Amino acid sequence: MKFTRMLSFLLVLCLFTGLASAVAEEEKITLRYAYWGSTYENEAMQSIAAKYEEENPNIDIECIYIPNSDYTTKMTAMIASGDEPDIANLFPSDFIGWAEQGRFVNLYEMLENDERYSVDDFIPNCFFETADGVAGGRSIANELIQLYYNVDLFNELGVDPLPANPDEALTWDEFVDVLCRLTVDANGNNALSEDFDPNQIVTYGFDFAKNNMTWGSFVYQNGGSILTEDGSAYNMTDPKTVDAIQKLSDLINVYHVTPDPLTSSTSNMSVTAALQSKQVAVICDGTWTNLDLSSIDINYDVACLPDMGSEHCFETTASACVIFNSTEHPQEAWDFMMYLCDPANALDLYSSGLWMPIMQAWYDDAELLAKWADPETTSHTAGFHDSAVNYTAYNYRLAPESCVVDWAKLDAIIESALDSVWLGEATAEDALTEIATPVNALVKGFITFK
Image (cartoon, rainbow, N blue to C red; front, side, top):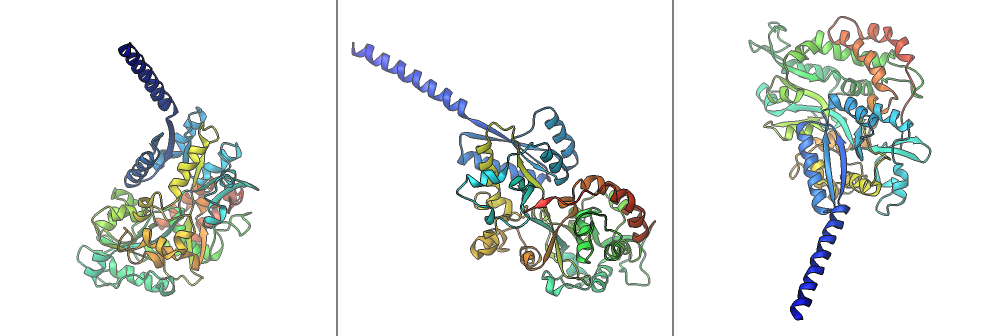
């Protein structure tokens, strides 16, 4: 009898255990998260997702990594087929169209139901607003444009380090002089020498990706703009905008300290690789480049843009992180989204240099700031505080692609016109004036931020 009862008990226990396991397995949630970025960024995201899974055993994060150039096409196809992820990073130009279709969870409502956070906990220009009281997305991270330079190359050529503090910024003429001394031909002559051969350059003083985020930072620094202040019209014929673009063109075509787009493309080398190989001494890029540079063998530091005669202005960027309202797990998706943006939970994303926080306390509190920006314990360099962290002490504006509605359409025309400027085939004034009418016809204003 005892044996029979024991056997019955064991059978019931096995049945209960099996049912419990089945229920637990059924309750396992998979969240699909789509994003773009470099190889290093992908590795960082995979690492953070794995850490979240460890802390939340009932959730699997399926990381969907898509290269930048294919991102819009693949995301469009996923949405069209009803296969959109739960969470996704989106380019602002893509965000607006899908927001108008009502595809995203209202993040303000999620915030209201989350006692951990309020809107006031976040930096300015964090939330993408589609209507009063409606935020379809939040900024993935805080990022801005700055200069990077190869410290060893500066030392080899006897050039002083670039200043990081905007209050000590070089004038434009001083900046050009430094770039000339850093540009060297095959015979060892720099661009200031009478014997300099611009057809045999082995090291360029400066390079920048020929896109709106880099040339846009110089436009803002010069007091110019892309649209009028109210966003109602094209404004790149403004003298300050024209002057900034022409100055960049002159670096290529007059001073020969920057390669033209054709030379850059034939090298098959990214600006970061060119900096590492000493083919370029200084580059202009976003703060996310800290991750790539800190992952390779290079002695580098960061610096502020030169003083171009106007009030110093940082260019910041913002791309949207969204939750699709088709998700079956909005609360879990929200929790992972907030996990990503809270540096306490994902410190590697910030201390590695990939992102800057969007939570204000991580700038204001010295102890928190040190956790992600201290050059002694993180991947950031000595100049990072002055050249990036302290940006709110100055003017700052969002990059065109972050804030202009339908920017991709405008930019297609603008970049095509600027190609002729970079190649020295047209002046900035002529090129920017010629496209005024077609670009103006596409202007729809600015994306609203809070």
